Image 1 (cartoon, rainbow, N blue to C red):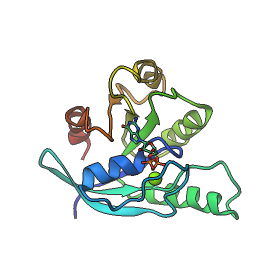
Image 2 (image 1 turned 60 degrees about the horizontal axis):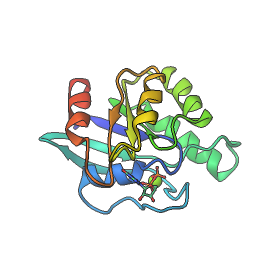
Image 3 (image 1 turned 180 degrees about the vertical axis):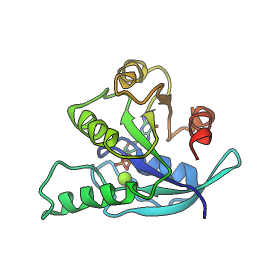
Image 4 (image 1 turned 90 degrees about the horizontal axis):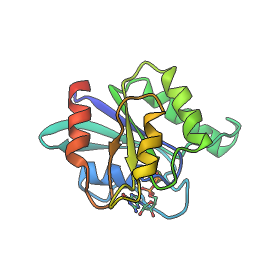
Length: 163
Ligand code: GDP
Ligand code: MG
């Protein structure tokens, strides 16, 4: 079985865009509206010859488990259990938000290696957010532009030792 890599993060940070880039097909729904990914999607990913199964997750909502956002969050929590590594995506332009910090706290309780990914970092627009992402406590964050394909080599460097 291939290693499993799960993409985690709050809505609208570019998780599905990253999933699509790794899978190379338009499998995940990308939308400007937060929370558009309504369930988990799995795909075969290739990153510079590294092969793994990648899982795109629904947006993280701080909601009751009886509600749809709450159940989506639950699904995210369940699927991290079988994952060999997690890509924790933040929006480098927005910086680290309280919800990012909540997700970081939860991820630290999980038995999975985490790579912090500061997405939307094309140009220099994400520099401040990249710096903030260090404080999340998952080591050196990877500056990435999932949309423009920048930082993919750095993502490989961070991921290959873990899987
Ligand atoms: P998700 O909710 O985390 O799955 O986020 P999506 O992948 O649906 O993307 C949310 C929005 O961010 C969309 O408008 C994307 O086009 C945009 N986006 C994703 N990646 C990047 C990036 O690297 N740079 C910029 N500027 N925008 C991005
Ligand atoms: Mg999505």
